[in-house]
Length: 160
View 1: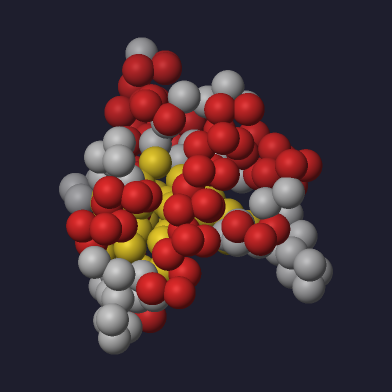
View 2: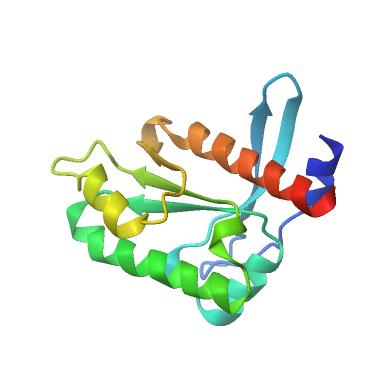
């Protein structure tokens, strides 16, 4: 547990265009071990220019990629995932050993893009993926738990 807490150093605080910080702390309950406070940076794709992205990624230990299930957002989701993979590569971060989880949000919208189509287009590498309705609290916890396990695994590999 101590190794995980040391590996999860605070993320940098960034300013959003409206001047508010986009770095927040999230409590993640860990079974049998209490609660771990995890720094979370909310980084919309539209704000992911090169300088902001590099600053954000320097302090992070994992990413939850949130895809919007609304059909009109499908192309944007595909482009955003390709952009994420490219930006990680530009920072010499290999996606196959970086904690990355996919969340298919807004599964409650009428006509939501099928999970099969999202998986084929956004997640061909078979990353851990979860259906979610974040506004109702469905699926978000599972994403954080999966990300935590990946971070823990990577931390053990790096620091053992």
